[in-house]
Amino acid sequence: MTNKEHRRKTIIRIVIILLVLVALGGWFTWYSFFRELPQEAWVDQSPRNHFLYGSIGQEGVEGLPYWIYLVLPKVFPEYLPGPGGYASLGMSWEPSTPPNDGANGNPPHELPMGVTKKTVGFARAGLNCAFCHVSRVRLTADQAVPAFYPGGPSHQFRVQDYQWFLFNSASDPRFNSTVLMKAINSVTKLSMREAFLYRFILIPATRRAILKQKEEFAWQFTHNRPLQGPGRVDPFDPVRFRFFKEPDDGAIGNADIPSIWNQKDRTGKSIHWDGLSRKFAEVAISSAIGDGARNKYLDVPSLKKMEEYLTNLAPPKFPLPVNAALAAQGAPIFQAQCGQCHALGGPRTLGPIPIAEVGTDARREQSWTQSQVDSWKKMATDYQHKYHADWNFDTFSKQWGYVAVLLDGVWLRGPYLHNGSVPSLRDLLNPPAQRPAKFYRGYDLLDAANVGFVSNVPEAGGQKFFLYDTALPGNANAGHLWGTNLSAPEKEALLEYLKTL
Image 1 (cartoon, rainbow, N blue to C red):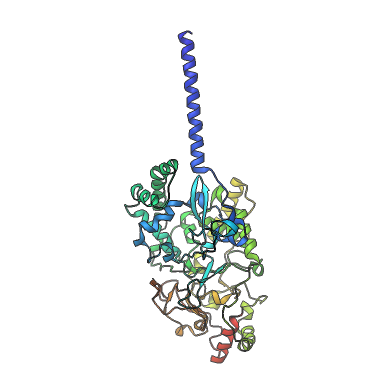
Image 2 (image 1 turned 180 degrees about the vertical axis):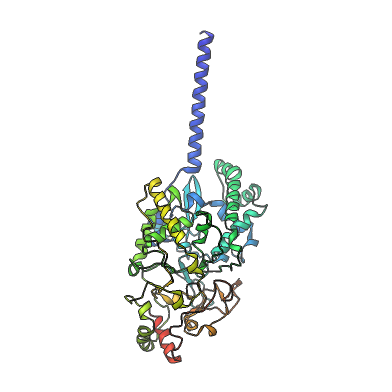
């Protein structure tokens, strides 16, 4: 063999080796970061399971590596509102129903409702609609296991505190591979590949990503914006400032999390507090995008499954006996005082009522702008071109006022008004000057007499509740004077009837 032939064969061998190494590197990268697997089978064994645990695509963009998510409360408990890990933030776990290993549709309970688990390269924890839309209720203070109602508002969940738990944890110098790997190794045995990924890639990258988000959410503490507290969220200003790059104009979009059951009675009508859309699918997709389910990962078919579930999901019945005779007396009072705006088929039901008429705090209504409508519609067009999406935001619009909502399951939807500024229906039937100026949010104990949740205690069972101050910007409890002039007996009858809706 000549030297020339030897060199040529050597070059060929080197090229082959390099190609093999590139192929192996490509495979390793795909397998470790982009390989997407279906969720475990039990997630789709019932529409309810899918609503509570089904992925909407959030994991691929803003999901957290599963084992980091699991150990953060153990490493950084000082950044939580109290003991109990994520439960201290008001997140809820389903009661255990053996066998809870995924067999027979009984889910494992290492994650709360609304938190998903999916493999995109590696196991990731994400969020879905149930993150904000599962109500929890206890009838007595010593009731060990509360009742859970999918589709209801998560009254106790502190969305903002959850965000800032992550931000504060990532800002702590202990958010490093040495500390977190020790915590992870105490709860699981990672493979060599996984241990390498977590130690050298995932932990540092996760910290950088969370700190970047922290910068993007710094606006929450400017312009005297009040804390959201449990059961409230500002869903659209984060999109305005993070994605649409609008200047911070001091808007306050804080609002109570609404119920989303019984969508069949809302078809074609104004949705959300602001009447921003007439299609539930549009609201669901925009909410998913805002929560991090974006780009190619946005799972519209999964959202459609959830919409099908919610379309006919009945509002829950009041869980205690109702005085039928008194409720019957309240029915005509409801029709006379409330029916035009809140009864199914009422001439003003599910339409916007001008601020000048309803008189409630205007800050949330002002935060939804025509510029956002235009930006959302452009986003839909971009998705159609880039990802061949078959959806749009064609009914997104700027309305003036707040929607007169249906009152189905209203007993479970306190506190009341769009900003959650009135703790009970009884308080809502009083003139604004007689409504509580301050009260506590976050207790899951039903206030059956006043119809709402117990709101006059600062803590219970080691859990501290959130003091809501109606004097703060966006928190006013003014307006909605309908029913305030009724006599005391008429109010009692109306309250009893409202329990039946």
